[in-house]
Image (cartoon, rainbow, N blue to C red; front, side, top):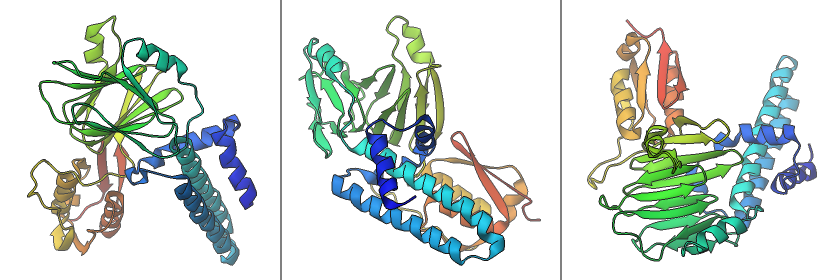
Length: 341
């Protein structure tokens, strides 16, 4: 694939002209996009990202040409895998961070008829919306939000169409509700992101706890039972076709802190430390359950400084040192291996 073809594929995706196979490929790699550092993204940023990732593709191709004959087949597979990942990342980024092409007239009409304020982000940059309770909403390009000028005394309700990051002011007496088509996201005070793609809606939690359930006004009991509660570094995806909620870990877990400002970041530097201590530190810092299938793993020792690594890189290095491996099962990380005597 040359540079022009690479660029055209991205344009096809943005214009909604991808084939079913191309779209399926991009959707499969969508999970890689849980990197909140991408907010906000401008058109200049996207051009820079495309340039850097294209260079990575060329580097992989160059490495293949220099590889011994018995590695060519493996590198060929790797080249296409890397290209697929890169195409997925850029295409999905373009889809999210540039103005969406869908029409929101129906959403605008239905909300304004209720006497709500309506705001649509028609720019190519993030639009900040300040609500009367001091909550902040960062609307992605193409996204819309509707809300009352003044919230009710017992609850705060907003209506979303598109992708947005919420930072909700804490008020236990006035729960905050976000209505997005088929689901309701309920919080007391937290930060989270809501994304909608085709027939699924995803909620990623950055801080606090969030309840997500179906928006079924005809059955109040269903609202409370057909749903889930998620915590930081967790996400839930709601599939509208089968009305199913699926929980998982976000793709890039970050350290989790309480409201205690004196809380310190754990330094992941060890000298002959028991693996059990390392895993306890990881669980505490990232608020993620880690299970060992073989208790002998806890008896191994680890030496190294992995402080600056991401969570998954930390786990990779730890598992390499003790000859183990890990897998993600829902919102839990499971480590297996022979362990140590």
